[in-house]
Image 1 (tube, one colour):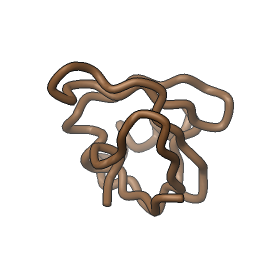
Image 2: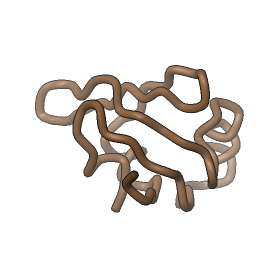
Image 3: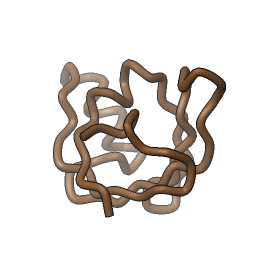
Image 4: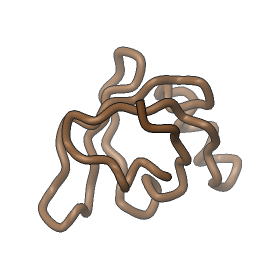
Length: 74
């Protein structure tokens, strides 16, 4: 399951980030990292972007990036 499978208000624990190292590092600085909790605050029309809360930070991800972040739904 990935972040792109979640709906507004749902939560998950990040299991892995399957992206190139530069983008993976950028997400890590924004608190989207393995073991971290995320909550979907808002999903745009047609699920093009996802606004997340990740350990106190708000992060917007495109659908393509969100699909590469594997999670366990809580």
